[in-house]
Length: 496
Image (tube, rainbow, N blue to C red; front, top):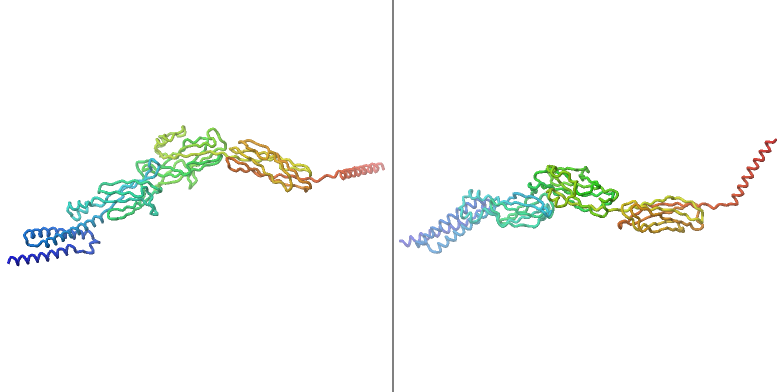
């Protein structure tokens, strides 16, 4: 009787174990869609498998079931445990979220633009644990408070990486413990897309507007044309880019220091052409443009020597700090002193250049000669510029078969304000036609290896006709005879 009872109990447990194994591996397609409900289903199956395994162990110890029955119960428990862990991990990964707490753009000491990003684990594991009432030991074993393997990179609007390094990895990000990462910007932008890859491959990209460091009250100023050459009497134009790095001030004043007072300077707005002394950033933009116009005098001096660079600084001072500095034009500032002021500045350089100006003067542009005579003209060459003229050459284009003589044909140099006279002698050929003949005179020279041309002049030589002296004498005698005849006739007529 006992044997029959043992057999019946064994068959019942075997059937129950098979049913349990099948129920433990039961899959509901909606569990992938509603993972929290799937987790509850897997948790109940896991708990039932734990209790059943304990019962099977007791029955095995009492020799009421075979070892194979116990192994089947263990396999069912293992399947339920794996399903439970998978469902729990699926919920945890689904609930993982990395938030961008801050993204601050700043300028490093080396002048390069950088971005400091603060990331926060916003998964909310505590709320999840309360919601599904999971055992603390298993829940903590799976580390729900940490997000693993976070990869961060910065992209522009074309999805190109614009950060150095290209990508930064955070191994672990714990809940309640934000972490900061810093990038150097390879492209100067005000908004970036922060690309995040973390957990089981979750990818998230968010475009954010970069904040300014509220602890810095400064404007960063840059100029692509930081060093320029300008001729005396000309204007140099420095295009300036101003970027706000301040959380306190938005109105600033522009100042120029270390530039000689003999040089006129002023700031303008490139859009409106209006002159600037102070400017304000709008709330919608942290970047604006300005221009520095520098007008050089016409002549060099001890303060403005030619070919010697003049270094100066452009300062951007917060309006609320103007009283601290007073008159900045009373002295020359070193770069260390400028840096100690803790304001935005840029170092610029101006190289005054002189250039020669060839002025051609001709006291006489017309001359009348007879055939067989020579025409002579004088040309005065004057350097009316600010640099010496070299190799001043005169070219004359006379009519066909005319001969020319230039003394001197080449002037080696003409100093600033100096004058040289050149003589031209033009000889017409035999049988030259009577009338006016024009001769073109051209001048050229070099100044600082740059070609300089003077004003062209046109000389006019008139060839007069030959005079017949015999005919002239006969005409004179005829006129005298006529006058004498009239006088004699008048005297005779009066006597009658």
